[in-house]
Image 1 (cartoon, rainbow, N blue to C red):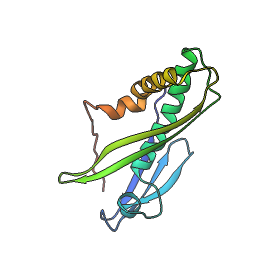
Image 2: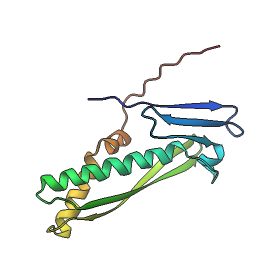
Image 3: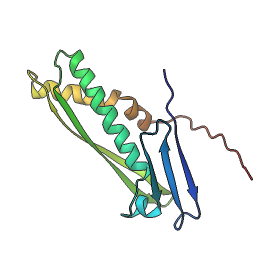
Image 4: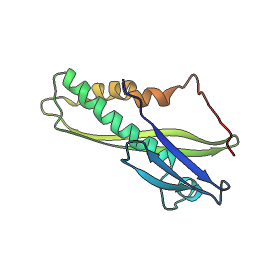
Amino acid sequence: MPQRTASARWDGTLEEGHGTMRMRSGSYEGPYSFQSRFQEGDGTNPEELIAAAHAGCFSMALSADLSRAGHDATTVETTATVHLELEESGPRIARIVLDTRATVPGISDDEFQRVAAGAKDNCPVSKALAAVETIEVNAELVG
């Protein structure tokens, strides 16, 4: 399976600094800052990128699961909302809400709800966000 890569650079202090995040594919490169992450400033932030990844992954997983259940979706549209909360130990992602709308001919609401619940549990991004046993850091000090 392919590996996917993105990078980020941060210059300056947490509150006064600024950074850039970029996808190796070149499909996205943009600024981020303390203000764009913890307030309402211009630019993106890691949580917004997590939301995009989760919405995309879930939409594809739901479409695949619906097809496996014998119901091809015409469209699946998902908005993921990542809730960042500040705790004593620091900020954390406390909740993610997936709001999805799909057009699926010939499926009952009960079956659609069952398939959607399974897609939420089984999309790779949901799995990655549910429990990470190991986080490995390879750090190099330069200069």
